[in-house]
Length: 622
Image (cartoon, rainbow, N blue to C red; front, side):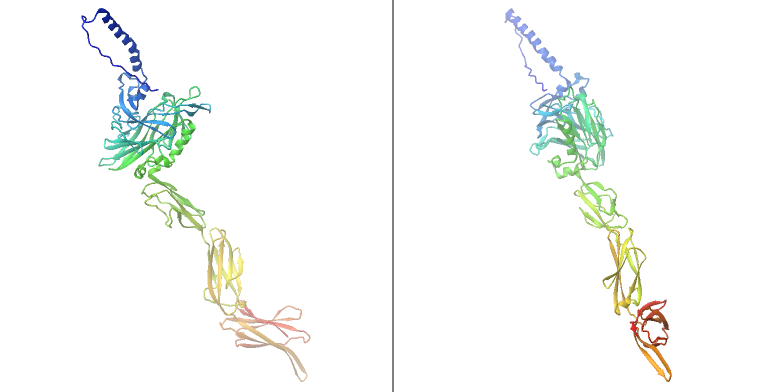
């Protein structure tokens, strides 16, 4: 409630007793006494205003301010000072009052703090039993989010008389920008650190954003802490309702905390508050945090190290909502920095934010099937910075072939330099092809007869099958070792032929080997006749076998084996002729043991050591 008093001023001149009669003098005296009795209660009432009322008094945005921290328990030393305030209304109808031109010693009500936030209309507020009620919520703050710096390592709470802290204050009247939506407060230098603030309330969203801007004006690097100062309107009824990790304990890892004035009679007249203090993975997170039930003066702190001339920004979002759930949801939304969260910020300002990822970029490394990425898979990299190296590691049976997505290349390990945007980079792997080789015959050799094609094949995930092709025609398939295949070269014309073997692994990858050989077989043409001889009284019948041999490649024939079968029977070996005995192109063999009533068939095998048939003649029947 805003208290306004209009105090009239009274003056009179002393009159000579001679110039007034006794009755008039008596009336005048009576009037003076009556006025004392009339105005004394009013004066006493004003003196007895609560500390909170004194802080919140304002007339047309001109506020009477007092440092609540200074006057707690010391009302006699409270000083009421006139200050300016800038009122901004967000799109939920919430009016934020931002302090400017603070000229007195204060902590939670210092320059740039929100002296109050209240709804301009009735809203649907939550109740203790899960229902709702329509009411106009107000009294969010008695002073919210002042800041101080400390160079001696102190992390709060901030006291107005404590020499460890330099409170941002006494900086003159602020200006506005961004169509009047952002209050800009003048810079001031606190022990070599220039501090300024910008406070933004959007017309298209419901929050208040603080940019606390620090620049090191020293010639040496400076390390200091930034501490917030707060005084909630919920007073001793302040309770923590939630935190970003889902409990009601404020911890350094929490990105936000929500609070409220505890229910009384099922309702609470104050708005529900949210405090978004940092983003996940931020370069400069919290170094201290203090929220407790029953304590309306929480505080939190950050630590900065700035090089000479370097600027860093601590960003904060204040949230005011009519329900606990709405406050939680808005905090969770702002942590992710949606587009509205950074409106009215320059690219430079965004890059200088250190307690959110606004000034950094997220680089994510992922792996496709068949491998993993070793290293920091999600990296928050300052604008223009570089990632730490990551390595693509293929699984057994796979190989790394490159990166795709926001970056394409084959470097491994990979270091992304000069990062200027969010990136998603994927490692691509392919199944490692098996190994396969033809061990025999050798490339360019001459082959003949039944030639064994000997193959070795291997793969980390196992060989599925091996195929053998001659001149492009599949001849053999094997699914298990040993991979040795007999090739009958006698079915092929003399000359050059191609052997190709293909090995497949279980994942379908394949590999091949190929050679060229020359087929030079021994050819043997068999002819014959049944001969009947008689001389005087001697009669003889025999089979005369003649064969001609063609051996252009000089195949080392060890022997010729002659087979005979009687009609209806099977072939039986008849005779052997050594290769050296049949050295000429033509050779004759006589089969003298015939039954003249039986028909016989003949064939001849050409043998090389050790007993390998390299060709077989044609059959003849006599």
